[in-house]
Image (cartoon, rainbow, N blue to C red):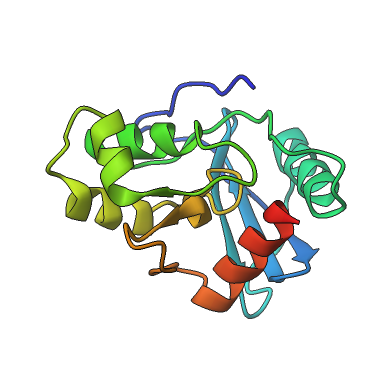
Length: 162
């Protein structure tokens, strides 16, 4: 799976569309370079203007939810701090159907005492599902925070482990 390096802060067009997923309505925002965000929303609040990347995100999400793919191959362009980007890049290494802890991600990025900071960065991940923050759980094995709600996190993990 090849992902581009996360982009920086620059001006670019933003393209948007919505995708009806089994866990709710997903809003997809992309730049000319890659995905800026994928998140579940309550309503369609914006006019749509998809580009080729948005359309490919929708195709790959469809394949993911139908069980045809386990990995995404999409360009990423999320905006965040260097630390957040490091955590998000580490999340991409968690295989489908596998969970890990915040502490393990902290070790993976070379900051073994930063599990709380990893948790905070995980919570700020703007690209749900594709950057699999749902695969990170508490050290005890307990499901912990997910911006989309623990019910969605549980659903995604059960889907991947079945």
